[in-house]
Length: 80
Picture 1 (cartoon, one colour):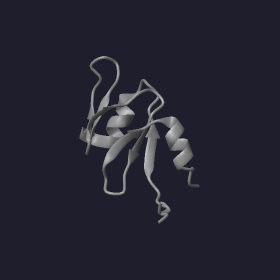
Picture 2 (cartoon, rainbow, N blue to C red):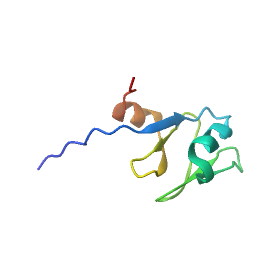
Picture 3 (cartoon, rainbow, N blue to C red):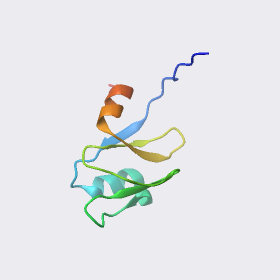
């Protein structure tokens, strides 16, 4: 059997490597401030590092997770 991913709109921001305040505004208490230079986010699968250039996506159930830019750009397109 083959399946197609349902079209879904998500909210996301791209981390610029500097402004963790934007991440905090977007994700609330899910962001943990950087200890060694990179913040991390509490996800359903555990804590994950957010690297410069990564997108942080708010999923359909309100969960947050990071996504590498190459994957994000293959999977999502901007909604006008």
